[in-house]
Every structure is written in C-alpha cells, then in structure tokens.
Image 1: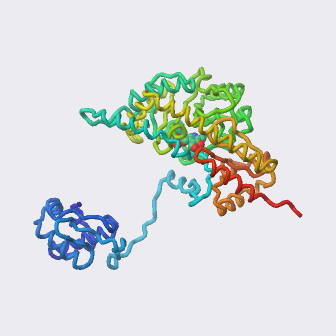
Image 2: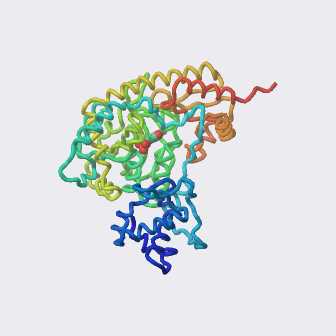
Image 3: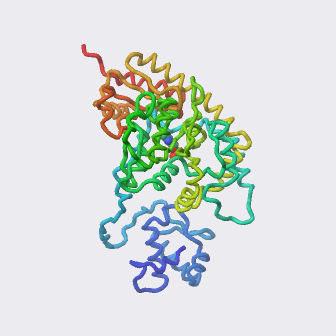
Length: 490
Ligand SMILES: Cc1ncc(COP(=O)(O)O)c(C=O)c1O
C-alpha cells in the first residue's frame, strides 16, 4: 500500500489529523473495491513503514475503523474487511462527471465487431473451437512445465521477439515431420495463438482502406482483425472445394487469408489446381497469402493434405499454425513461418506488440516436443476425435436421416450440417430455440460477409464442433435437433 492512501484527493484530502486522513483513505479503498470483503489489510507495521508514520498512528486508525464496522481486528492477525460489508459503500455525495469517451477509430470499429455471448448451462454445446479438457495430456505437460521451471537462467532478461531459439528449432522439425513445411528456424515467429499471427499480418501489410482477400464464408475473427484496422475486405465465394480462385481474376490486394487444408467453416480441401491458381494470382499482383493451418493435424479418411506453403516457389505464403486444437486454446501459442525478406518486419512488429511470447511456456513447449509428448498426444487426440466424428456422423444419419446433409467432414474437428426442412430465413430463430432447449447451436450465416449465400443456399446451415463433447452429449445434441425439426403439415 499505497502512498496514495494519504495522498489521494477527495475525502482523504480533507483537513484533519493524520489518523483521520488514514481512516478516510482506507475507507475509500474499501469502497472502491481495492480491498474486497473478506480480504486482509496490510499489517500496522508494514503500513506504518510504507507511509512513513508511526505504528501507533496506524493502530489508532485501525481501531477507529473497527469501531465504525469497516474492519475486523483480532490480536495477532492482520485487520480484515468483514465479509458482510457491501463492496460499494457510498462515498458521501461525490458526483461523477460524465466525460465523453474519446476512442480511436480502431476501438470504435471493434465495438461493432463483438462476438456473441456464450450460453450458460447447456446440455450439449456444438461450439467449434472448444476441445475436451479430458483429452489434455496432463502428466506429460506437467513434466514439461517442471522441466522448464528448472531451467533457471542466471539473469532474467527479454528474449528474441521471434521466440526462443530452442522452441523455433523444435517447431521447425515438428512442422517438417507433421505437415511437410520446410523452413529455417530464423523464419519462425512464436506468437500468442493464430489470432496474434493474423493481427501482426494485418498491421504489417494493410493500411486503412487497403483491400484484403478473404474466403466467403470465412473465419470471423480474421475478418474482424482486418476490419478493425479499417482494411477493405474483398470476399471471394467458397464452394465445397474451398475458395473459388477463378474469381480472383481482376482482384488486387496486398494480402489474402485462406484455410486451404480445411476451409473454415465449410470444410472443403482446396484442390491442387486452385492452389496453383491462388499462388499465381499472388505473384502477379504482389500479394502475400496467410495460410491458416489451424486444424491440419486432424484428417480422417484422406491422405495428409499438403500445405500451400510447400507448393510456393515465390515466397508469397506465410504459414500459420497453432496448438489451440492439438493441445489447448488456453495456452495461446501459435507460430508463423514467414518469407526471409519479412523476418525483420515481423520481429519489429512482435517486439512492439509484447516484446515476445512468455518464455516459461515456450520452454515447456520445447521440452514437450523434444520428449515426443506432443506428437504422442496428437496421435491419441486424432484417434479420440475420429471416434467422436464417427459417432456424430452415424447419429446424424440414424436420427436425422434425410432431414440433414453433412459437409466438410473429411478433416478437422467440426462439420457443417444443412437442415433440409429448415429455410435459411429461419436459421437464427432455430438457433435461439435450440438454446432454449439446452443446445448450443451456431448458424452458418454470420460467417458470410455478403449476400453470396442468398443466391446459392436456401437451407439453414450450422457449424457443429464435436471435439469438446462426450458420447452422451453428442447423442443428446442430435436428439434435441430431431425434436426441433418442423412438424410436417397434417
Ligand atoms: C480458422 C481458425 N483459425 C485459427 C483458430 C485458432 O485460433 P487461436 O490459435 O488464436 O486459438 C481457429 C479456432 O477455432 C479457427 O477456427
């Protein structure tokens, strides 16, 4: 605490004895929630030392506060704010002047881009993006974290903004083994999840009003990252195979964002001819392409999909990976592979954003990859999710039958479910109704940035994530969907 306890303005600044001023300052701190009900205040010795007053001044103030009911004191322990004391005690008749908020254009744009709230207490939640906590490899991650903690350097200092060299070396080898991505460790930037990677690309390549190519429908948080800096989003329609790259003809942009291994959300895998068309377009117009390989480790009945990065001979592709699906989204750990000419721009931007990602976590991830725990876990998670996927597909088939059509199920951790009897106009109210029946359901419409779908798809569609669900929840979710189907006319 808090020299400002006695320096603060307001009640604490009124004239009076030192004890009175101290009492007022502590009351002010309790009222403003600095000390919550049940929490301990500093000891009289510590407070006296910090404020440079005598201990008896502090003791008398505490006794005064106790007499007024603001603190409980007992011999030998620190004074505590009583549990019963309401946090917001009115502070006299101080009036708050409303000052108009002056926010930046960035902050103002963000207010129009807020994601929907989570629904509480669901019987099943088909939200894509969540994964099961039960699958988390707690013992081997624990070991990796302990190992990282034991590496106690002599001095604690800032590291390279690109990330710890050891982790970048192990990521380099991991990406080569698992995704066929070949790069030098100096091309890797460790970031706080894909979102930071996308945000860095937005800031490095785009000014306000600059065009940026995105898939339509596409990943909302990428689109928002571009819109937040004022860029002009150019949506390119997606079909069952991914972005329709023939529609890039005549389009110019500095940047394009794509999910070629498993298009988000429709689930298509971009055919090789389209990949070449996309790369040729980028070379022609001088654009860079962000390849978001967010769930490339999960594929089922198909061969591993080659990355766009491995086809790129002109250094146009920035590869983006994350551990959000393979390990946990809570870790906020991702990695970019950038062309050599861009390394310094990324290093400067990452340094300006947050110096570098947390080193303890990077060391743990390095140990986790090196002791083979990561790939062992991915193999196991792939098996578990393959089972979940099989159950989901068979439940849809058995319970919904002709009422539904599945798309995008060959890879990743979500599918798209089209409901044949529900029109797209009813999608939003269907989602709401599902929520009221305890089912978290997410319509496809918000993933579209324009009216493309109006022309192509008359049915209601839903993005159905299954990686966080157990068998009971999957069955229950599909049963609820069955109950919500419109009744055929009598
Ligand atoms: C298309 C896409 N990219 C990336 C991610 C992961 O983002 P992050 O690494 O920021 O957790 C997701 C998560 O659902 C996603 O859907």
